[in-house]
Amino acid sequence: MVECESMTIHKSQGQTYLCVCVNIGGSLKRSLLYVALSRATNLNGLYLFGAKSIVSDNIRKMTQEQKQDEIEKRERTDDVRKEIKLLREE
Image (cartoon, rainbow, N blue to C red):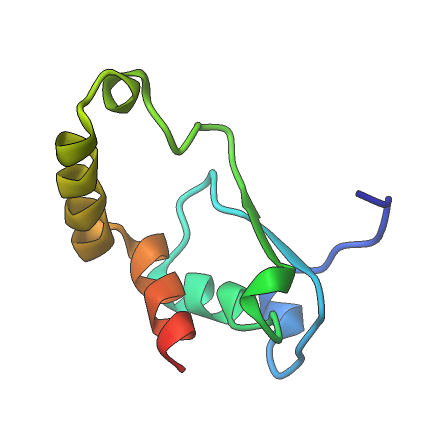
């Protein structure tokens, strides 16, 4: 990663970038999350980070079948995952 400048989600509206890094650690409204995720021209240039690990200790202890069930549940309920799924379908 190279040191660079940042901007607010509001200021980025109407623009697209090859590389977008989004801090999803805080609470974002769905509309702001959509704007942030949709600034990337493709998913290869979209980087998400936050304070929490996506993989919790509970998930590490699950069987493969339990993990798949949990992934499917999160894809239906997690706002970030919903938006990424929509971007992939476009």
